[in-house]
Image 1 (cartoon, rainbow, N blue to C red):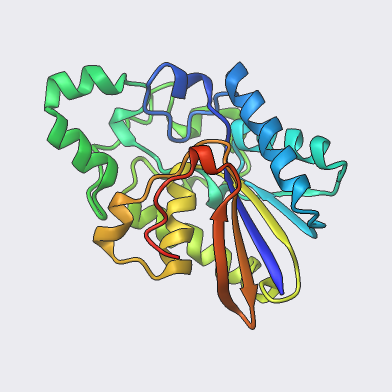
Image 2 (cartoon, rainbow, N blue to C red):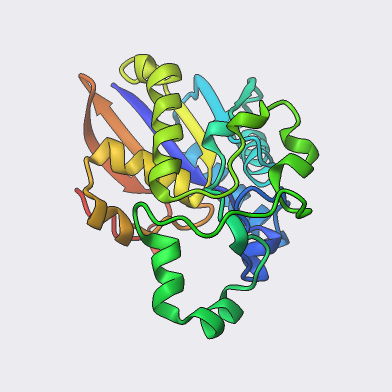
Length: 236
């Protein structure tokens, strides 16, 4: 038996401001820090010793995981992977979601956010929010940095990393991943074998640990630890 715990970072400053964030490296809002702290407390109640910690390259995911580790009293190495980053929202990056809905229409914005293979227009490389202009990503080869992404693009990089780095541990190690709404949705699509329509409906709440139990390399149970903020898993 082993466990995989998926945590979407706590509420970020740009979540609070209702902006498309993507690869922009913003920090947690005060409420997000409280969400991360509660996430750590909920995980601690499960009395699970975490063997491996992963986060994206992004500050909001890393800081969420550090707060969780403090609550657990477990200060192991955090392995950071850009492949676990949030989806890149292209030219939508930094824009207010409500303002864009007024400009493009709610249906079009919904398509950009939830369709499987639709990419927003690319973000200009001269834009301050393009990843090549953000210090956090200086380690990543330029050819690997996107200008925009669909959920399909995000899925492909996340699952490639999962299969290469994690899948071998799924039956004998307990893993905690701090990542983002779309990178966690990508993992859920793979793990729960969701189709392209089902994944468009999947909501991932901030700061609410999703505990997945494995037996013999198969999922045996799954639950959100904060039941008051749980979303429909479409499974179990």
